[in-house]
Image 1 (cartoon, rainbow, N blue to C red):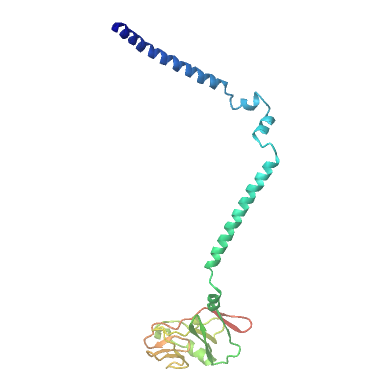
Image 2: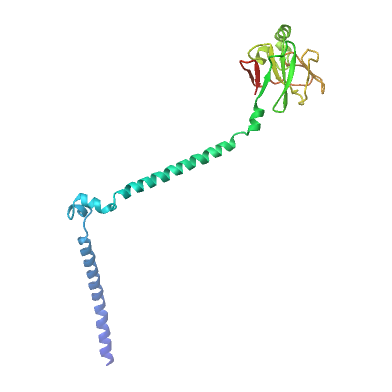
Length: 230
């Protein structure tokens, strides 16, 4: 009895590889049959139907839906571009200076009533600005200075714009930032009493501890007789 069981087990073991090979061959045949039954890409519309019918099959049933989709996508893109533009404009507008800052950027001075040989002081960006209308003698004196004698050499023509009779200076001493006194000092220009700096009629340092000439701010004249500083 035991021998019969062993012989049956050996027979089963011998049949197992044959069964596995048969199953593999059946699966391979099924796959190849399915592959052969699938139509080729160009056979989708050439063998079974016409090109027009193929196009109708892959499109919407209603042609108006395509127009609706195009309009919807175009409108969404337009709204997105408009929103992006609005955000960019708002961001750039926040970077611009405010109205009060712009008001301090420039100062308008009416100089039509300023007599020859006189000066006035205005405020620009929190600092004093000296405006002097020089006479012919003062202009000649400023031009007859030997540049080799100056600590900060500059000609008078380099310090004036347009007409030489108008001199515009920033009224801050270049030593420690004090405000000089006009029409004073040893050279008839400005004098800083804090540490004794003397400036001539062109605002150039001539005596004292100040290292540089009085600064010339940006300015221009308008056609109606006004001075714009800034």
